[in-house]
Image (cartoon, rainbow over all chains, first blue to last red; front, top):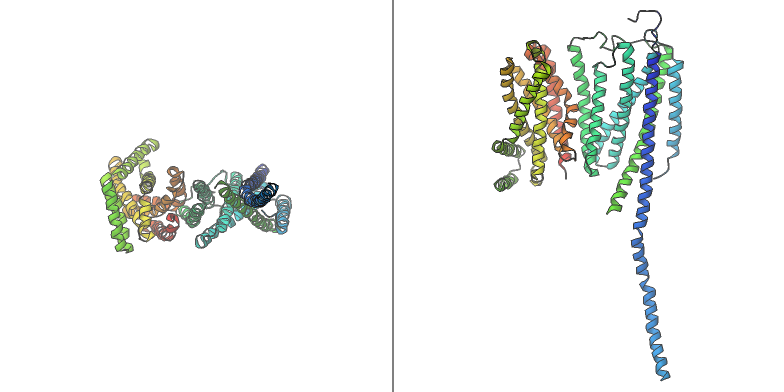
Length: 92
Length: 232
Length: 241
């Protein structure tokens, strides 16, 4: 079968082989990039969600922080009230 | 996610260059083989991709065993990366081998030990991914994956051996079924250069892909963790 | 049902007082066998399925006298493999659905005892089916299958198949796609067993020289030892909660 002098023309098979190699590799790399890209997007989205869902504790902090001025203001009110009362008393 | 390290970036570029050089050596530099003609050039990449498949197979087996001993999720990521690369490259190997076999052995497929074992390995890998697909708990998924990798990596060599035994005891029906009989050739200097360079290039490509895939696995694990955190 | 669970809990307490691996293994196997003896659902399903497979092969392969000689070993092993998968899947699924697996895991017995117990009961189901199928096959196709060598090969092949199958079935039943997953997981890794068993059975049926068959029997023994050992070592990871 292979005793002939000139090698048989099998270049079409060779081309097919290399086309398949580069095609499959390209598809794999493409899927690689797509998956990697999607994961990065997911990560960003999740981090945003986390930041959005993070505010509740932050709000709580502001709430926790808010009472202080309130307390202060009430305290000042309470302070001021006696004064007013004093004033009123003095007025009377 | 940290940006790619410089080493990995350099490795990416080196891999692409090596692939280009290797393609040049295989397609142009190496002399044409006398009996098979041009199709013999497929051989360089056929063996090189098979080599990558083997490396992935071994890496997966080792990672599976280490995972079972250490129970560290990072070995699960390594295992998945190795299996996936091995799956892709064994697929290329089988297709290239088939294309080579058509003009040389006059058939697309022979039930030769190597071909059959590669095909069965592919089936095991597909089963591996189907198994992982069906499990939601990441810890259990990793454990089952490692167990199945271990079972597979023990069964594949036995499969290879048993098919070889099958062929040596069984009379060879088609004269060309044995690759050592037909389709062998002596490698001349130029061929050897192309062959060994392809092996070297694909080893580097394997390391590069493996590294990148592990990075992606880490990213995926991070996303999964974050998802769980956000959901609850 | 109530009596069953009561019996189970009773046996669990019994086992806790004697945490001997061998005794525990037998207790688990015995539990399966008595349950099966009462319901016979698994056995009848496997048996009817096997007979149907043989029937289909008859029409699919036109089993005339000449082909029979060469394909018998293949046909019986395909039948056993399919029936085995059916049995393995069902036996583990029942265990999972009725919560018996959790009960067994809570029981203070070695996990290895659970594995070996399940192997013994699964093996028993498969062997019983084989013992019924072989004479039926002999009768239907007038081939004498009563050859001690063949029976030994069937035993060795079934051990290997069940050893891997029990491990993989206990994984498969814990997944979402459990009904279809077991054969997909099991067949590619059980190929060496099937090749060796088919070749050795064929050798005995054709009356080949023993030296021709010996490599296959060795292969079966090696496979059995490797996979029983491996399954024993990794079974913990498969049932861990």
